[in-house]
View 1 (cartoon, helix red, strand yellow):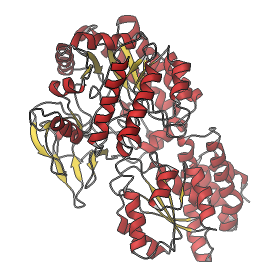
View 2 (cartoon, each protein chain N blue to C red; view 1 turned 180 degrees about the vertical axis):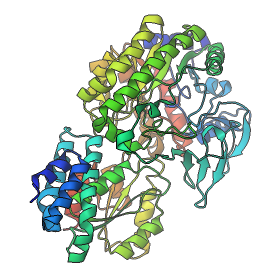
View 3 (cartoon, one colour; view 1 turned 60 degrees about the horizontal axis):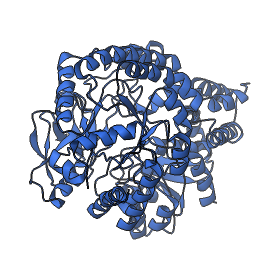
View 4 (cartoon, rainbow over the protein chains, first blue to last red; view 1 turned 180 degrees about the horizontal axis):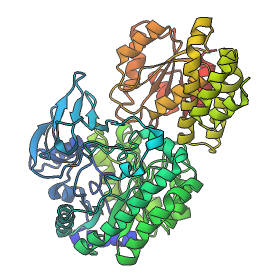
Length: 424
Length: 210
């Protein structure tokens, strides 16, 4: 059985404090990296016989569906997310309006979610909802979510100005601060543990480098060009990170003044350092180019708040975990066990008392979408057994649940977590 | 006469400007295009691949070296065409329908070009019929398919099926790769091989086309 509200929050707090938490807490839908595709959320509502209503798209880039309280209760979810003040396309989650997915599913989207269809049949979406400027996202015909449209101006090497890459790092506005305060307040009322997504602290998240939220992005916005810059233009990158960090620390003071210690955790960074078999840089490069800035932001958080900080990085990052811990991150997500070196037993034994694993519950590349319910059950039970010992584990899938995931497999996953919790 | 070890070093170090300058100078000095590729550029890209395999190089270094190599190659390609030089093989490459991700695919294309293959890059979100048309038009011996997404991976099977339906399957070998792709999946959809990264893709391409 799912824990009640108070127990839910306590279970997460225990897990974060590396205390054995029974039952193992469950998260779905609290952040942009622990979400469920809107089509699967709709199927879950139907499965549980909940009020029929078009699901809200709370993250329009990956088309993640909002998990309302009735569904959260049915699924036994213990965490509630307070999303950032604006979506990745630069508009707020407000003024909901009906919209039909390309596959015909009726959903609700924010009022500034404005799209057009190009000659290829692809869906185009616009920064801040402004259809008079170039679109910043594309959903291929027949697709399920958007990808960034690269709007890279020609690069004049002699006149590259790092400040062009910092338009997005500004003192937080009163409006955005109010949105965070209201979001956290509403999330707290659920009685579940709260994780808040905070903007402007990621240092080169490749989903955000193209700035799908800006109308006219300047600087280095092409993904390949950015990666090359982390090797060939390090001074430029340092300057951006210095600015981002300085602004972030100032903003953290404002945010803390607004929300205090009413959240259990914050999600600040989704920058991926791992690939399926390797990484995007060496550990040495991480320690010289990224770590000092992460450390400065996380140090401020730990000195002034009780928040735990979640670091998301896909891929083979086993060798980075010590450095993530040194940088002040408390939680790792999504714990991609299918990537090279990410063996669950090894991770738990080597790092389990120093970092919380918020993920790793079941593979979403293979097992959940393509396996059998029995294979899903086996993996969930095994991962829960390994990761939950002495706390330090919040159950969720390895990254977002994708469209077309068989409902039977999803239910088999939830049943297996309940089975594990019941048995412990 | 240009110091051609500088061409090797420029590609290895991802120095596009020097790679282009040295190639220009070498051609002005009468160097033969195929010699530059065989003796300097391909060995440099092989070394890039070796360093990637042993994690001395990562994606940024691969991209930089690939760009330097491409810059030099663009100067040589008209000369190669005019001389009637035979490539290591003709390759059609693309990211499958519904998938817009192209960095991995671009890396493979660069590495294959560096290894002397003639590469026809169809880009991203490529429909099966476009692969079929390109194989026919270019008389390609190898098709490379990329997918980053779990939801687009099945589109690889559509390409294999389309090549079969067009009667071309016996004429081409098919190599697949991308984050969610596995050797088992490659085998299941009837591809000839799977490559886990750009460096391995070159080795597989060489095996499949000889």
